[in-house]
Amino acid sequence: MISFIVPAYNEEALIGGTLETLNRAAQTLGEAYEIVVADDASSDGTANIAEAHGARVVRVERRQIAATRNAGAREALGDKLIFVDADTRVNEAVVRAASDAMNRGAAGGGSGVNFDGKLPRYAERVHPAMIRIFRALGLACGCFLFCTRSAFNAAGGFDEKLFASEEITMSRALKRQGRFVVLRETVTTSGRKLRMYSGKDVLRLFASILLAGPKALRSRDALEVWYGGRREDPDLAG
Image 1 (cartoon, rainbow, N blue to C red):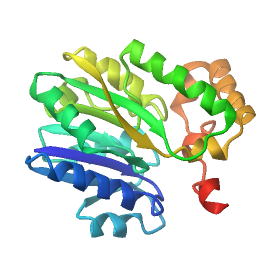
Image 2 (image 1 turned 90 degrees about the horizontal axis):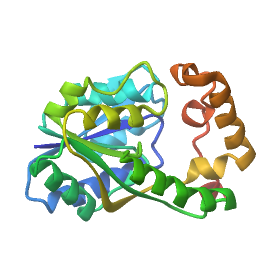
Image 3 (image 1 turned 180 degrees about the horizontal axis):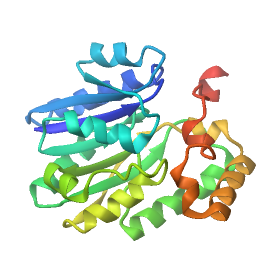
Image 4 (image 1 turned 30 degrees about the horizontal axis):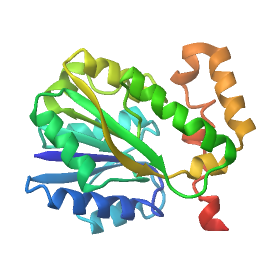
């Protein structure tokens, strides 16, 4: 069985579309699957929308992405785990490629990533470079990561000491368990955070992380982009 694990916090605007694409893609594979939504302290209609799309909802009260993904994985029944962010849309090709990779013995992997909507100029320039860097280093982007249950357990799950960049640590941990592949197939994730924050905001964030060192990733205090209350996409608001 494939278990799709979707961490979510106040994602009522986007999670319905994500779950629709997961159901469509999975139904074409002819393989048993389930969707587990790990709802991390949402105060909106996220859980109700998830249940309406056939997902099993696990309530979490951590406000931490690594812990939320792990909570979903603990409740999942599948031997193949695919972690998909609540604002990310998959397709049949990427789901099939992930499943095939695990069937052929891969411990885990990731995919290419596109952003939806119009991106600010700074993001248009940085995005291709970041994708090439992640692919060259063999790292999964956070919005889509897959692994076998056995590799997940052997790796110890996502590092709950981290509030960001946990997908990088997890990619490295999975590489120690076996082959790790970054697929050519792509998913489409929301570009809203890139539209919400200016280039100066993002530069200031990463500068503060670099100055503070690794300890900056061990608290949500300085991680506004990941844990701030802003959720409304400027494209939709306009």
